[in-house]
Image 1 (cartoon, rainbow, N blue to C red):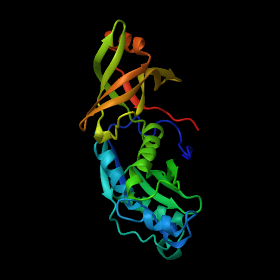
Image 2: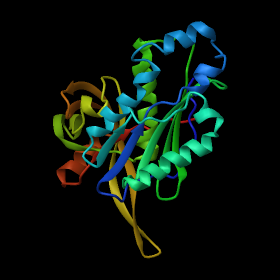
Image 3: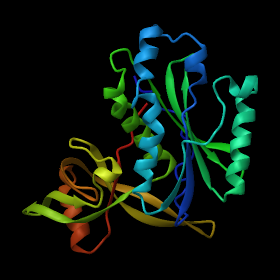
Image 4: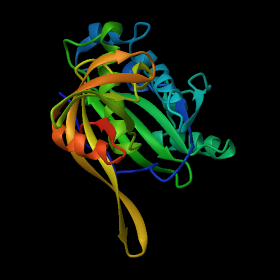
Amino acid sequence: MILLCYLSAHTLLAQQDVTRIAVFNIDLSEFKTKTSLLGTLFMLDMLKPNALNSIPEHLVRAYSNQSRFVVIDKKNYQLVTDERERQKSEDFIDGYVIDQGKSEGIDYLLRPRYNAVDNTITVRVFDVATGDVACEAQVEVIKDKVGPEHTSYYISILLEQLNSACFDLSYLVVRATDSKGDKVREILVAAGSGQQMKEKKVLEVFEKVDIVIEGKTKMRPVVVAECEIVVVEGIDFSVAKILNGGDVVRQKLDIGTPLYCRTKTQKK
């Protein structure tokens, strides 16, 4: 079961050209000090190499492939969390990390954490300027998906939440690759394995419409179609088939309107 919430206002980083983010190691202090809801066997499975411990590496890899981010790898930063820095509070730890971020000119911090109470993996996004949690993604660990072979399942869910609701990541529609009559049937998208694209992944196709509100221009994404990835062509490109709205996509592309794709927003 996926727990979808905690994702604040739509576009944390939409107005910034390049953003410096730091990815810290996952906090497993509760994992090691409390009894998991799934028991000792679950704990041993998830602590194997490339299970929970590899989540920060997946985050670093995913955002390093995005031109709008400069990623600072802090996975090996020596921060004691086994006992909450000898019984110091989580708030104290987070505040300490934020202070470190300020000294290094970092904009946002990504802090993964396992919570043994509700058996969830969370990635908190801290706004270094304010010290607040700007956004949060969370997924519940389920009994039949434990161990290293299932890490990609959890990271894909976390990245979808972070990308769509926290970082407002979108990918340009390069061109139509297959059309029939007045409808586009397939498109080339400027996103590949480097952006965690996989076959059967469903995306929204949208255009960016500028709206002036009280003298300020804001971008409103208007969805015009849906598509599904059918072929991942390396790191930077994928081919997607149009599921609906192919006629609108044809019209927009014919008049030169830029179109973009993003992960389809999942409903609670």
